[in-house]
Length: 217
Image (cartoon, rainbow, N blue to C red; front, side, top):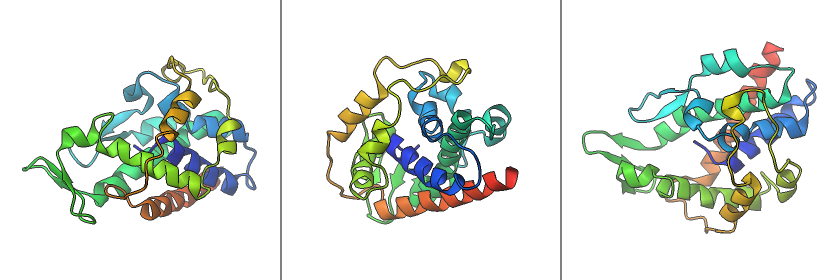
């Protein structure tokens, strides 16, 4: 799934497109875009997981998500829906097409760079996949897709949703965790993700998401 800063960049793009069409509380909406990752201790439940089109990967069950949290009048829940919408489309339409999933050899290959990895080190919490977002997040800050001001405007304690699976708090502050992450300052190399392609994809999905929301109003 994308990083928290990718979700903030997406949320910011969506907010700018939606605000002229509907009433939306910015802080609540942007907070909602973080809640499924940062305000829960059980991401299996908070992401409504079902099997993706590639074995071993999972995506949100968007039919269930829409039934439970799609509420246009609730900026927090609309932000949560936005988060899970990006997760689904990122995995099915960006992550899966971006790599070669060689199941017989148990390898993940990047046709753009020629790199090849075993699944376990690729997806482990401190592994290649998540490490690549250290580079991407630095680029999102440097290129202005997310600013320190965007982060500072959000509350240290993300708002309650009234749903237990989203309100079981982590012990560490999400801002502290994010600052520790940004302090790594990994130089962009692009062996895993091409930053421009990723940002273009996020922008495309933000337009699709906005159009869907406006139609459902």
